[in-house]
Amino acid sequence: MKSSSPIYFDNAATSWPKPFGVLSAVQNALQRQGGNPGRGGHLLSERAGNLVYQTRELIADFFGTEPEYVVFTQNCTHALNLALYGVLHKDDHVIISDMEHNSVARPLAAMAARGFCTYSVAATDANDALTLERFRQCITPKTRAIVCTLVSNVTGQILPYREIAALCRQYGLLFIADGAQACGILPVTLRDGINILCTAGHKGLYGIMGTGLLVTDGSVAIKPLMQGGTGSLSANLVQPDFLPDALEAGTVNVPGIAALQAGIKWIRQYGLPQLHQKEEALCQRFLHGLQKLPHAVIDRRAGGVYAPVVSFAMKEESAADTAARLHDKGFCLRAGLHCAPLAHKALGTMDGTVRFAPSVFNTAAQVDALLHALRQQ
Amino acid sequence: MQTTIRFASETHAEKAKRVLDRNHIAFQSKKITTSDGCMIILRIAAPADTVTMLLHHHGIPHQRG
Image (cartoon, rainbow over all chains, first blue to last red; front, side):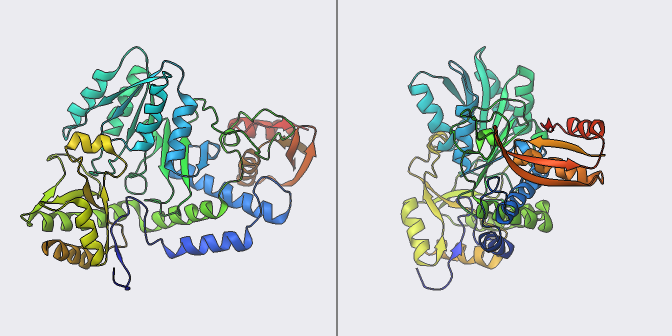
C-alpha cells in the first residue's frame, strides 16, 4: 500500500477513524481520571467512578433501560458469551438465525457438543414474513430463547427483530440480540422487546477496541462468567448478586468507557438518522456503480431491507485476491468468511466475499475511487 | 434532620445521588470499610421516610444507618 492515508471501508470490523472527541476523552481519562473506579475513596478513584457512572447513565438512556442494567464487557463476543452462559439452563433449546456470527454460533455449538443444550437454525429470507414463520416453526416446548443478530455482518440484512421480539413475547421466550452491526445505525432500544442486547463499543458506537456492552431489561437473572473483586461487599466470598457488580468482576476499561461516552455523545450530536442517511447514501452509490461492473457479483437477496454493508465478489478472482489488489491501491476492505460461516453457507458463498462497510467519515469521492479500482480487474 | 443510608454498590450510590440532586436534597458522601467490606455512606438532609420513599421509587437497593 502507498504511504499516504489509506481509504478505510472495513467499519463492520471496527470503525475508523474515530471522532476527535473520542481521542481526547481517552487521553483525559488516562491523565485525569486514572484511578480504579469503585475501589479507593480518593479523588482519582472518585473521578473514574463518576466517569463510569455517567457513561452507564448515557448508555441506559440511549438503549432504554436503567443505569445498573448496563454491563461493560471486553467486546460483543464477551457480552454474548456472558448472556448465553449466564441464562441458559441444562436441556434448554435455543433458536438462532442462519446469519449468526461465530460469537453466537460457537458458544452454542460448544454447549450443544457437551450435551448442555440444543439449538436450531432458522433460515432467513428477504421476505420478513417468511423469516418469522421459519423462526416460529423452530419453536419446541423446550425452547428458552431466540438469539439473533439484528443486522447481518456479511450482507447487511436487517432482520425483522421487532416481530421476532413479539414472537418471543407470544411464546414466553427470551430475546437475546446481537447488536454489533445495528447499534449506532438503527434506533435500537430494549423497548423493541429485547431482553438482553449485546453490542460492541468499537463499531457503530465509535468507541475504541476493548469495549462491549451487555444491556438488559432486568427481567432475567444472568449468572456470572467470572467471579472476583467488585469493590462491593468485599468481606463476602460470594459474588454480589446485584447488577452491574455481579457481572463486572475486576477492573473495567476506564479509558475505553470514556471513549464510549464520547462516541455516543458524538452520535447524538450528529443525529442517528443523519448518520444512517449518510452511510446509506454512500452504500447506494457503491451499489449503483458495482451493478454496472459486468464481472461483479453482489451478495444481497433482492427485496430485503439492509443496513449499509455490502458483500460482493469479482468473477474469476478470489475474494482474497480482490481485497489484496484493492489494498495495493490504498483501500482497506475485509475478505473472507467474516467469522460468519453460517451466513456464507446460506448464501452459497463459502469461497468468501469482499465486504464494503462505510462509515460517516467516508466520502462519495472515496467510493468513486474504489469503483474505479474495481473496474481495473 | 438527617438520614444515613448505606450502599454496597457504587452504581447504586451514584444513582441515589442523582435522584437526590434532582429532588434538591443535600447530602454528603463518604466511603467506609465495614465488616461487609467497602460501603458508600450518604448523610442526607431529609427525613428517613422521604429518603426511603425516593429510593424505593427508583428501585435503588440500600440499607439504613
